[in-house]
Length: 511
Image (cartoon, rainbow, N blue to C red):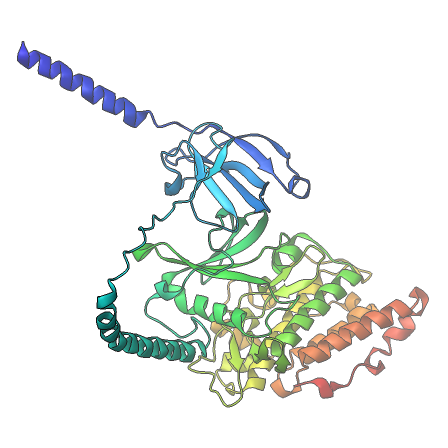
């Protein structure tokens, strides 16, 4: 009987423990709240049903702020699989004095109530003061120790000062883990939502950072150099400009072989100029707006500005200008992105080890395809201008201003060399045959497009020294928009014959 009793007791204990393990509460619904519900087009509050992959756990979360003692609710809802939320039936923020309070939990509607309960560090009671007769002895003993400590502190301060005088985190290192999280992102929940694009160096996700959408570009660790170069370019003095993609922060995620390098920037729903032109045509005014803001950003990038509030902005060559790297904001103004191949030019400093034949083949200038470029600042800027001419041609090909059909979107040289072209194909078309994408006859019958075509030809000139600068192209676009607005429809035919004699801004603005 004793053996049977033991067996029955063991079975009972196993079944109890199994029930406890399997009894983990499944999260099906969470309390929902969105402070910016009007902007996002959602309900302000209610209940959100949680969905996810079968092997992933689901949680609820709450985020809020403390406004002078009053709670300001930010967002509540479902949260995807997060080890920090496991087996927590209550939503409790335990970090001490965070900027934004965040908690997560498991169980239906567990985020209806949330608490702030920081983990307090216990302090020891006041030490007993030393006996008066021991004080001189302790003082004499501590003087040498204090002197050594002061010397160490001064040495460390001098070391840090010298180290921080160079750009932070920009020197190549063997361990990407040396980079701390960006201060702007610390303790803020960042959740990937939707994969938007894949490229040579990684992929781009739409993500949620508190109340706003952001773009997260994820590099595998083997492409660390591209991530680090892009981070360096965004961190240069003076790189905040309305026509350059807004940079938010950079982080290292994961450990060991699973390390990923993240670059967080503003998110623009309209996406790249390539994607927009595939799905849309543009009016004359829209073409002028996109073209002008695009070349304005490029002109600012190329400019050397010595006296800005945050320091000296060096000239920067992008080296991968293409319509895929031009993003459109909601108002159709353009901004330039993707600085993984960019070079900065500082007086008296070398550009470092670089390879001349980089970029996207379709947009490579003749001198790049030949491998015969001069490693000087102006040579690299002229390479950008060649590619800019091709981007402007793409815009012209989808414009409805001319009296004629609008072609389906195609990339530069797609008609001449096909969709999947090799380096040899491009060398044959661009260098040997000296071909360029064609202008349709009806474009040249529209005053503005005719002016734009002439400007494009001067951007992609075979001789690099003959190409226009970005600043000059911006002036020309402003001029051609102004001139076309002044011309009545009845005057167009007579003006077209005089296009080459129009008063363009002087070509002395070229590089």
